[in-house]
Amino acid sequence: MSWVSFPDGFEWGAATAAYQIEGGALEDGKGLSIWDVFCRQPGRIVTGENADVACDHYHRYRDDVALMAELGLQTYRLSLSWPRILPRGRGTPNEAGLDFYDRLIDALLERQIRPCVTLYHWDLPQSLQDLGGWALRDTAGWFAEYAKLVFERLGDRVSRWITHNEPIVTAMMGHRVGVLAPGIRDLGITARVVHHLHLSHGLAVMALRATGRGQIGITNANTSYEPADGGEESLQAAELARDFDTRLFHGPVFGRGYPASVVRYYESKNAPFPVEDGDLDVISEPTDFLGVNLYSRSRIEADPARGVGYRAAEPTLPLTDMGYKAAPHALGDFVTWVSEEYERPVIYVTENGVCDNTGPVDGVVEDTARRELLRGFLVGLARAVEIGADVRGYYVWSLLDNFEWALGTSRRFGIIYTDFETQKRIPKVSAEFYSEVIRRNAVESK
Image 1 (cartoon, one colour):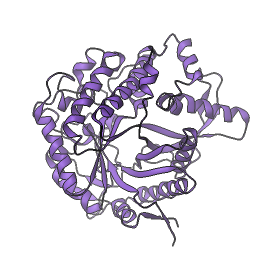
Image 2 (image 1 turned 90 degrees about the vertical axis):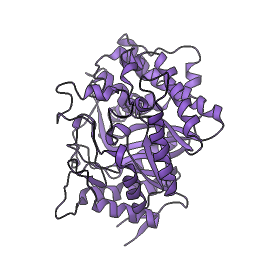
Image 3 (image 1 turned 135 degrees about the vertical axis):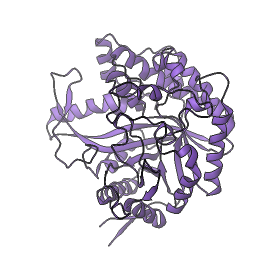
């Protein structure tokens, strides 16, 4: 048996999102979010559910924080519900909503668990969507006002902030493909959403800098792209995939603008990015770290018949219960690539996990598939650190089985099992594994 160690001071945590766990959707003055509305549209959620209750974390947060402490978590990544704090997205804040986050953050600090707070994890106030949502440039300014409000309220206790979780998903799945809220399918709107999300990020970074305290970054959904073979066409296709995915959402933040290949494609479809003078300077306001979310890899091959010029090749690896390729090497590979691509930024792995729908038998959840794939992810991450990536921490997705967006409660990512009828929590075998990793600051490499 051998163990691969992480650097001294490396932080271990777990991540969640407000809409997926909080519940309390219509309580204490909270406004409607686009997800509250989306879930009530027939056919949008495969299970026909909504997240009005979800994990009932709004009422059970103290018990959940106690579970975090039992696991040994050193940090916890949560998101704020914008409509819980500003029911109409702007204007007068809802004190009951702010009070909830005061209590939650205080409970974390009482257990020596460092909060990492995401400002936006997909739950736009419906009132702002009614005005145009992220397709409207004004929404970027309203986001900055919301950010300023929470920086002032919580910044005495929160020192690590994330502006957006996975803006690629907000833009593409919410506005291009339309399978997530708000359920729009329009390339022109998508281009505006991409740019306004970026702009809102830069404005929020500037708002935090004005307070003189705290660190801030952005986190995105990433895939580790690999050419399907060693041929030049596949190599070029993989680079195109990185342009349309990774570089589209990282390049502007790192001062490189939008990739030329992506700009050409959108302009050819009469859907240009609405860049105004000074926007790219705002967007590239220096950040303190890059958040990396990663679950799998994709093999890429050329496809000249498609406008983007590439496609995903047939999978060659087993699939998880989510349909993702079980690729334990993907995390280390991507972290190494993104570190080299952007000149070794500070990195936090802000989401990485496994969907494993194994349920309890005699009170025990033997989610061995999750445990072993997590082990592989962490071994690869440790090796990426060894060869130079500046990774400071890791957040497993997710603390709890939760409401998995358009899939309802049919998919389980938690290291703690949630019985959605009784709200009973059961730590899984993967939780025991992760707790041991934290205790040792190392992972068994086998």
